[in-house]
Amino acid sequence: MSIMVPSTTPALIPPGRQTLDSALHQLDQAAEHLGLDDGLRTMLATPRRSLTVSVPVRREDGRLDVVQGFRVQHNVSRGPAKGGLRFHPTTDLDEVTALAMWMTWKCALVGIPYGGAKGGVAVDPTGLTTRELERLTRRYVSEIMPLIGPEKDIPAPDVGTDEQTMAWIMDTYSVSAGYAVPGVVTGKPATLGGSLGRSGATSLGVQIAALAALGRSPEGVTVAVQGFGKVGALAAQHLSDAGCKVVAVSDVTGAVHARGGLDIARLRAYVSETGGVRGFHHGDAMSHDDLFELDVDVLVPAALEGAITEVNAPRIRARLIVEGANGPTTPAADEILAASGTTVVPDILANAGGVIVSYLEWVQNMQAYSWSAGEVEGKMRDLLLNAFTEVRSVAAERAMTLRQAAHVIGVGRVADAHQMRGLYP
Ligand code: GLU
Image (cartoon, rainbow, N blue to C red; front, side):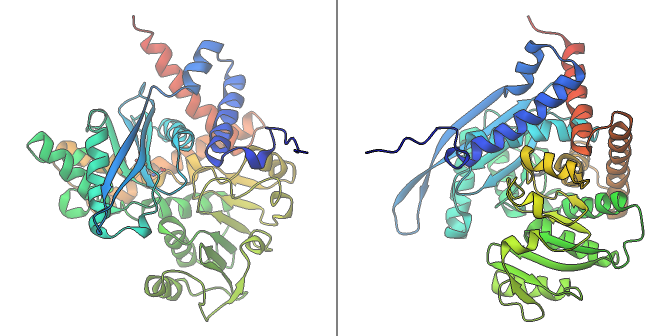
């Protein structure tokens, strides 16, 4: 006898679809609050352009692999599409669509003149040689070439990509154009027109947002960081430099805990040597799940989507969550956290430092000019803190969570831009 499993069983919904459902749920709440009509809601719920490509990659042993790639431009009402490029084995069109949508609200929220986009390639970059990665990147770029450009859509790093990936993209695009086009991509190496401060900008933004939300001296404030990668490791460093005590961190290899605080500089050195936090001697090993339940003041999810769910949310003891990752908290978990009085600084605010400095990089490229590290940081800090203040006051005025307020502001600005421009034809 076969057992019928209802198709709504959460475990059977692919992760990408769950991420998109979360993004659509947040949009729906904001649209309801803003009183947007059905047509506008549908427009905002639907990406303007989605491209799926097959990317053939010649492996070192001569085999030919074909992987799927995506680029989604969710909205372009306020300016060129903007957003990162992710290399991850489980990425799919739904996930990339959700991430593109979040980019739209994020750019609108912090007041930079962009729409939202995201790219993805369903591949594990750690399983490829550097030359394979280069071939893959260049071929993916040539497949999405008609969509991108400094006035159209500007990629940047995300999970699994870095400065080198951006250099290859810039080169592939520039060779096809016949001249150097640094503004086609942000997060490039400084020698190619990358901005000072871009590589650490997301992490610094997480620290700035966390300290603003704390509203008291960070001295001795205890922190747990889930995800010790590009964003999490440097966020842990910045928080520790500010006086916080980072007592636990995790990555794919494991989790470590030290009640008296981890030496983050030492741990980062250990990770760059061994590839992960597992086995770090100056702390005790702990399980991934236990990290979420630690009695800490601040929890920073800085890995992937869906880390905080209705299963672990009731056990979270941190009173402040600062989202370094995109979409780490599901809507069901959000409700539980709101009911327990936990403050969540949402992704589109907490991790916006990255795209803000991407914007500053692009402005410098378009002017063929460059600013000092101090100028870049000062401008980023201002934009981020202005957005923070706005979100906090809207949340207080309208008795909503910081996430709801951030979405009301972001979605509202995009809706306004769309309405002011009107519909063609
Ligand atoms: N991938 C980053 C994000 O999710 C940065 C995007 C960008 O700089 O364009 O915000």
